[in-house]
Image (cartoon, rainbow, N blue to C red; front, side, top):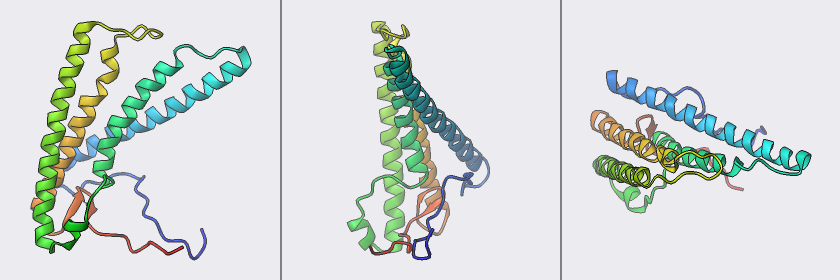
Length: 197
């Protein structure tokens, strides 16, 4: 790195929850589950795609099931990723009004945002479960792999539930601390490490 490059925080290390006791244990456990889901999903997708490309060039024909495996992994990565984004405060924010409010108002607003978002995530979790039930009743299968299609959507309610729990824990963190938190471990604010180009 050059001397003029900004120092960037590395959030890829071990996660330490800002919550005390049992809630902190749950937070750390969920972060480990997310990390494994994301890492394995990306690694398996890369291996599957590279193997399919090599098979296509070497044998003249790709693996017929490769597309379905990647579809499963994309769903896994997407729904594990929403929990990860919430945990690291990387979700999209429309902050023009929020930034203009005094700190105490921001804290109240962040608690409301976290609780409402948590309720919405659990609502989506419930409806994704109902969707999976409908798929199960229909008995559709993936043509190449021959497994029932509802299995690949199990990650949707799991991801929504993890994200709902994360936002709920964020609300608790904001209730129990003096600072405003975007997640259990990310304090609200902007990095001073940005540089002009």
